[in-house]
Image (tube, rainbow, N blue to C red; front, top):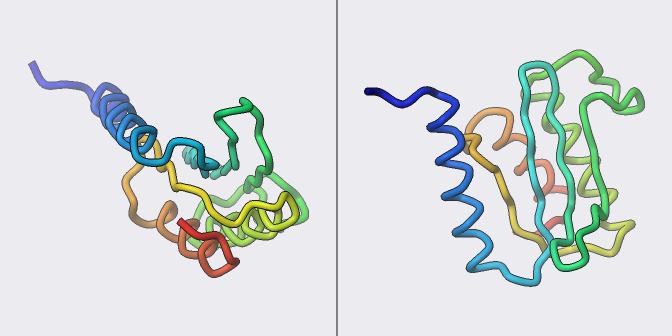
Length: 119
């Protein structure tokens, strides 16, 4: 029997996160979540179990509320890079979860890199 899209997504997410945990122990994680209507990102310190900074397309000051496109993802990426600098984070690793590195996720990553985050 063929696996459902959801099960394939969950398998891919576990595979990606386990590989990242092995190679990037002790570094801050840049975690991305994409839904049908919004995109959000968090800087997470897994050692302390705390979120250091976050950005989302739901924030009114970004001006992209209700839109989930490549431009909105780029604005969220620039916002997280700015907030990471304020939190004192320069180096992190990119956790895309089960999402493919294409389109909105790639635009977010590129904007965060342009903003000064290294991953």
